[in-house]
Image (cartoon, rainbow, N blue to C red):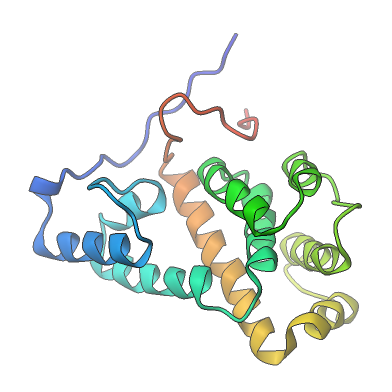
Length: 194
């Protein structure tokens, strides 16, 4: 018997019901992410409910997504690691195709989705995977995993990498807590707990 999908916890805010702050935030998000149309889904619909906070978060997100010194392949790979660890349906749904387009192989994406170590992934992706898994499991990072990723990214890259992990963890938590649904008719990439 299929499990009933839980209802979202926050309503969509129609454009005509938005406050001036919400409209300003909506416009900033749409411009920075080149979103056409008037409806914001995913975490952005959540952030509209707290527009001052949402503005700060969307600016951080714009930097983490588009302006870090990490190559897009490694950035998107890291985002998928976070999405898998949090079983963030929407985050995975959005970023898996972006990661593949950025150069993460379909096999690596399937391994991550299944919760497996991506053994056929390139060395740099495996180093990131090990660090992300260790960080989420122990809440710390040992010298070996730190050194492996630091050798790839350097000091500034490490700071931005940890920022990417933090930002996409915030996104995953927001999506999960507020039960943000996938677009109509889309299949969730992960089995829901319970």
